[in-house]
Image: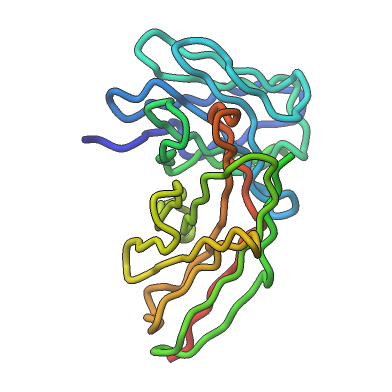
Length: 113
Length: 115
């Protein structure tokens, strides 16, 4: 099976712009979770989607949003970018049942100038 | 609320020496516990996970971890370090029945292996 893929891998934006990141899960997985990784805050949970519905959400401002499509692919969007949004954004997929392993993609590295 | 503490942000060992990376967790319900490894410019790779079937869990690349409920610990060990083990290691927890796709991670431990 193909692993989790994320596009683009690298992105440079300026403050105030918006950005959309994409994640394609492992075939058959219905859950996609998103994480932000920074040197200062570590790995933080953004949100999780299962069967096109957001089931869980972390403590991030409303500028961070996401969605999931019927084929389980997911996108996350960040509006009005701030310098502090520079980070590695990781998505992970799983079957979606309790305790299942999350499999991570390679991440999208976002730099906000 | 769940939390994870990894003691030691940096651990340095010699090749062939024992690797011990410490993880303590807090959880209000029975947890699922995971260890992941991250190599530079890559995503996270699962090393092993605990799901209550056995307290000693064996993972890939010779790593294992022991769940100790009384100590709320899930330390990662490997008897003999290889140069290729140099990476950052993350302990993570999810709470049974309530996590809905959320893993809570420790701050990570960077493992350096000296020849």
